[in-house]
Length: 332
Image 1 (cartoon, rainbow, N blue to C red):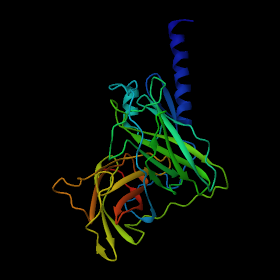
Image 2: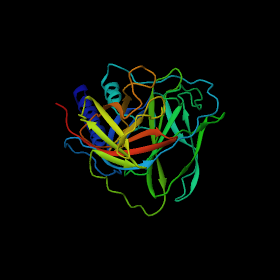
Image 3: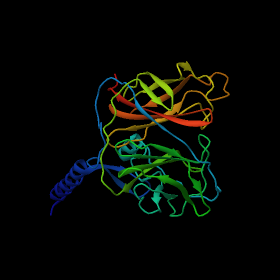
Image 4: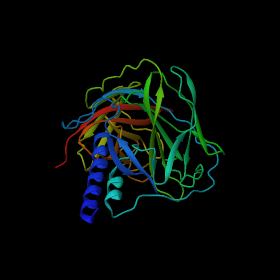
C-alpha cells in the first residue's frame, strides 16, 4: 500500500471515530493519559435549552448542612489539562460536574445504591492520579468539600457537607424520597491542586415520575421569606444577579454569614446539569458588604438555555433555600 493510500485509510478512520463521538457524546481530556466520552444524547431533565430573556422564579425548599470533620493529611500526584492545544482548549471550556474524572482526580462512590424512601449512608472518595484516596483538601467557603445532590429533573436539591474519615472516604446520611437518577457533585480544591467539580449519577430504583421545570418568575417564596431576583444573565458573559430577602413585607437586614458570605448560590444547566461558576460579590467584614437585604453574585453561563438556581441563606439560626428557574439568552 503506497503512502497516499495509507493516509486515505487513516483519514477515513479518524472520520469514523469523531463521527461516532458526535453521535454519542463529546470526547474531552479527562486527566493524564485518559480521554472521556461525555454523553450528550443520554437521559436529560426538563428545559434543555432555550434562548428567551432571563427571568427567574419558582419554588423554594429547606436547606441545611453538616459540620466538616476528619483529618486532612496525605498527598497525591497533581494532574491537569495541557494548555495551548485543541484538546486542552476544549476541556478548559467544559463546565464543571460533567465528568467523573478531571485534573487527575476521580470521584468514586463506595456506598450501595440508595433505597427509595429511606435515609442511608452516602459514601464516596476522591482518588488521585496515583490511585490512592486524597485526604488533603483546602478549605473553600469554610468547608473542605461541598456535596450537591439533585435529581436529574432538577428537583430534590440538597447542599450538604460530609465528614472525611482517616480512610479517605467521605460519609453522610442522605434521604432519597423519590425514585429516579440523581446527580451528585463533589466541589473541592485538593491541596496543591486546582478547584475541581466532579459529578456522578446515583440511581434510586422505583417508579420515576419526572417533575416539570417550574416556570420562570422573578420571585421565590420559602419558609415565610420572599426572595426577589434582579439582574440579567447573558450567555458567555459574567453577569451580576442580586437577590433581595424579605420577611413579612420587611427587608431582612440581619442575615447571618453562611459559608463565608451572606448567601451561597448553586447554578445548574437544564439537560446536562452542568455546574456553573458563581462567585459572591463581597463578604462579611470587608467594610462594604451589608448583611442584607441584598445578596449579589457574579454568574457565568456558558450557553443560552434554561438553568436552575438554588440560593442558600441563613437567618434566625436556620438555612433556607430559594429556587429559581432562569432562561439565559445568547450574548451580544
